[in-house]
Image (cartoon, rainbow, N blue to C red; front, side, top):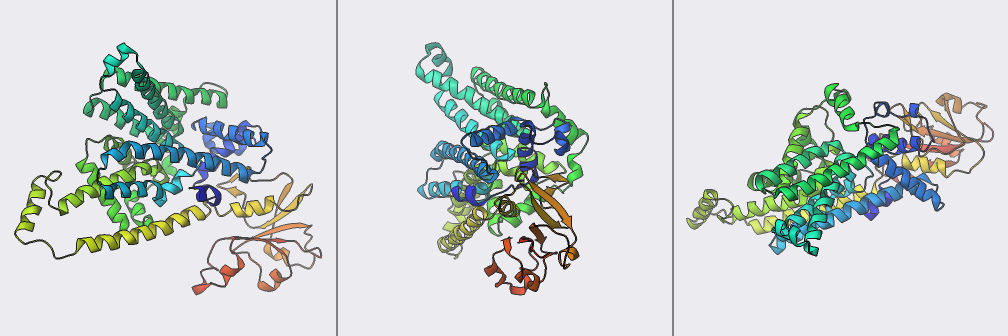
Length: 509
């Protein structure tokens, strides 16, 4: 994860930047509210995370750190630390449910090395922060319930054990409430967990009341943050519901079929391993339908399957529970293959009788298992290194090159066709250095003997990149792809790749 905080620069989705970082810049008085997305005007985004970004920016600047790239690294580092601690607590709490050594090892390996969880866990995004709060709150709640079997008696005694139980119940509720504040969709997971407490666990009403009290307090913190940020009392959750659900504005960003997540998961997690993982998760839901994780995730997943607008990042909050579900599902499947009846009833009996009649397959499952496991570990490791080492946004290297260029009172930066600082009709002010003059020019004008370009930088993308003779007479400042990569241009893949090149303007232009 530390590798990812250093190299996985940028953002996974524009919302991670424009509706958190840019919101913070507006509250700091560095940009106008007219330069923000429409969600700011509708007051539908929770303000707690932009406020945390403000605290991070001011804190860094207080100790002399002004580079936006260092500040962004600090935000990723804090996000990764929070997620890692939550996963550590989750593993400690669930490890006692995994008894066999082999499955314990698998559980620990997947918990901290599953590449798509590691990628999501380093993001300073609402999905990651809501997930971290929920995981931590979930763990504290499970710990409190295990300790508080004699809760009513402990309240009367007021011993240290009771205070520890009470505090865990309240703090767990606060964290669950904050998970809702960071991302409203977590209400589905919270609702599922409350349903499990009432219908399955049949929790003591005092315990349940303390958890609800904590949830209300957490939501209250979010309400105070919204009051401070927007300048008046506002219900951002209600505004979010009206805009995206009632007025269907979310659907305006694209509508996908109900099976979209299944296809995306299948393609992105490398077949056939994606099929194995999906099978393990479904098996867990079916066999462990009374487990609190099932009650948390089933409503969360079903609603996301039903809504029209879908993105993979919407499922990020569920990723932390995947390792336990995979191990639990496949542990039960292994028991079926071994003919055990404990989990499978008549199906296990049928499997055992078939084996006794000599009907067992001649396939050496042990050899196949070792080969499959070895291949999975190899592919997951390669994917993990790739996810942690590759920038989440290809533009960050370009921005840093321009930011670190020789500083003058004003620097002219010429671009052909597209301003790289603009995305979705909004400008990325966070990485923009003061004194930069962004000027659009035609590609043909750059080649004129005297095009009138002053001293500065010229940005080209792949489509507008000049020929080799021109490039040899100008100093290259930055290239998305290093020179040695161009030597590996098999089948012309380099020419088809996106990227940016920055050259200095020639003094004789």
